[in-house]
Amino acid sequence: MTSFLAGLRAEALILSRARAVGVALVALAAAALFALYAGATRVATQQEIVAAARADEAQRIDGLKKTLLTLESGAAQQEPPPYRDPRNAAFMGAGPAARVAALAPQPLALVAVGQSDLMSSAIKVTSGSKDAFLFADEIENPALLSSGATDLAFIVVLVYPLVILALAFNLLSGEREQGTLVMTLAAARRPGAALAGKLAARLVAPIAVMFLASALGVGLFAGWDALASTGFMRLAAVILVYGLFWAALAAAVDGLGQSSASNALTLVGAWVVLALLAPAAINSVAAYAYPAPSRIDMTLAARAAATDADKNRDAMLARYVEEHGSAPRGGPREGTLRRIATQEAAFERVEGVIAAHDAALGRQRALVDRLSYLSPTMLAYAALADVAGTGEARYRDFQDRLGAFHLDWRAFFLSRAKAGQAMTAQDYDSLPRFAADGEAEGGVTAALLGMGLPTLLLALFAWRGFRRVAP
View 1: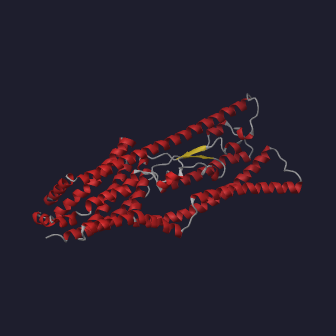
View 2: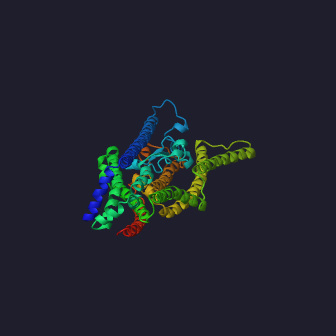
View 3: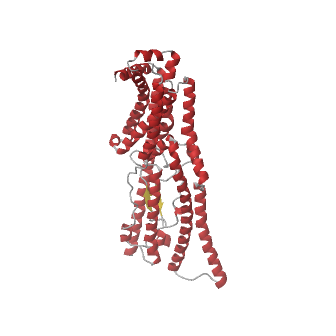
């Protein structure tokens, strides 16, 4: 322990006098704080969208109830048209009484954008097919989506490893080239412990700066209470284990006995492969193995299915007129039933298109999840997205609950419309509500294990390499 502490103090003194090291650590902390500020701004915007949608919902339903009371009391001057009549269940469920299904941001949503730039945080559910409300809004500007967002997950996954590699790539090779390695080994009582202390000094600095900057940013922009949450503990664990992985990789390469230039090229190549090429290759392999249409193609196919249902209705009506010489007779109830039949036909077709797309996408995601253990970068990003509540697991759960709520909403209104039952004030008070979700843990534990095992193996190789330099 004495030799370890001596090496730690000596290397810490050397690092404190290196201006480039201080600049790199300050830049890392500044980048983390800026990313958390940008994330907090985005979260505030999402909260405003959810609050505005819920306020609009309350205002709409309150207005319908007031109009309904006016009609029931006989104080109305004239009968409203069917699409504005709060007693008409078929029209009210299709729009005016639409309920908002909201996915509120989690306490640590500022950590990672995840899928929040593709999925709307507030959706107005109607009794029509899903294409009528699921793809009604443009979530993000395509130009912004192409460049991506700056968040803490981006800093941790891509920038943070570069700082670690820059500090740890030449501990042995640098001293060997400067001629000080022999002196260090000869002066230390336990050379291995002294080298371990020097390496620890180089690794503690970036990991500690990343952790402290993240804690400060989360406390400032998400509230100091968030620091005591389970989510922040997971965030700290991901930062620690992911940093140790790159540190162990740098130490293992440095222990091979090559030059500093060779170490730098090897580590930069490893960073490019693990952080850039491997994720792209894994996604490409999954897309090739289980091809699925893009979201745009799926949206167009769903809308085309709904349009085909309308065309079939018009064709059937035209054929009826051609055969009978006049349009089918009937009152408003018969017209409502024909409209509901068209909605149900469109609903079945759209559900089939979306189900086929989701099934193909699910097979892709399952393969990506298995192959992601080949890239610690993918594991780290997925874990950070789960901590933020913007990961795959939470949005998949949201889609499942949205589908179940859509069925309940349709059953509530269409059953009354088919029975010719008028909506009452009690019906508006008992409208189905979208259940709030809990905090989703996702696969953080599995990701930590996936990063921890290769870290231990690399640490073993590094230990063997450092033992070889002992006198």
